[in-house]
Image (cartoon, rainbow, N blue to C red; front, side):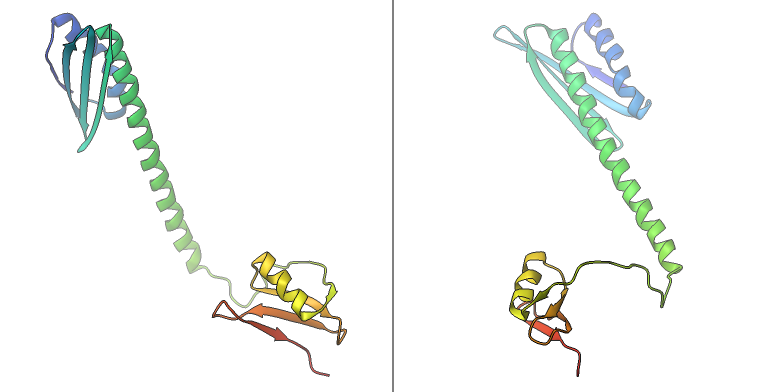
Length: 169
């Protein structure tokens, strides 16, 4: 941990003590730059952390310099936790993709993998088309009230038109 501070020894010790909260995320492998200034009656502190080629920065102002430093540490810790969570989530997704690729090699073929049960109702093909548009499904099965036979209406690949499957005889 490499700390650059402009200020008194007391403030330097305080910042080093507070940096232990950041150190738990990176070990000793990060650099810190602390800048403090006074504008009117406000103490402004700026803390920049550079770790693993990633920069984190927090700037706050408060009447008390120590409170300003504490607030910066809270902000930095939040930024670091957010970044770590994103990286962990990304790594988890990558590992899930890897496991999916492994599962894909053991593909089951020529088997019925899923069975769906639903009620088919008597209706006109136009009503079935409206029902298909409502559900945004690829197809809809119904009993045609004109022929009293099971029909299937489906969306064509153009996405604008429909096809109808009717049994013969």
